[in-house]
Length: 159
Image 1 (cartoon, rainbow, N blue to C red):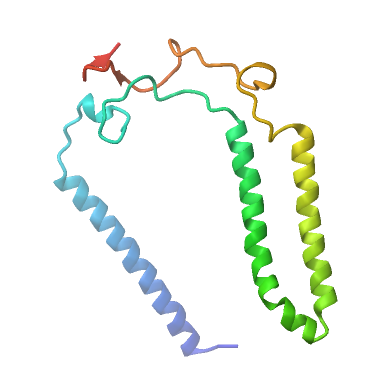
Image 2: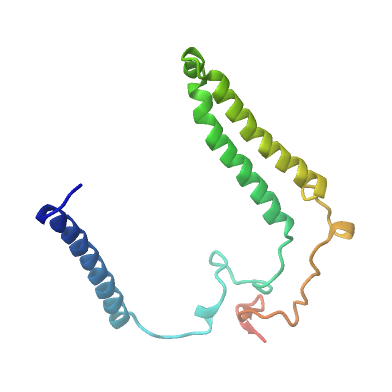
């Protein structure tokens, strides 16, 4: 354990580094605020559409199934990330006599994820229905939906 002047010097150098970083941040933000022009414009408030004039409102409902499928993908992506390192050293563990335990751990890990997949499939979250029976979200009324001003297709601001 470090004690005495060496320890204070280490903490002091970290403190100086954090103080210099905060001062640099404050200085660059203040300098940017002084130098950049402040010319608000209706065109600058438009939604950015890759350089194109936006068509329609920027506020609309996504089907929640996009999120569910993305989460299931992330779960199994993480599974591969956790399983691959074990699989690469499994042969060495078997030669050292630790293969049964490692195999059991990996099998239980995959079993938990398979149970989760069966659960998600049983709920019907992976079935994709276009309109109709499985529609979870009512479509938004685009005439009253809140959102930023939009262009009418000819570059002019609508409504």
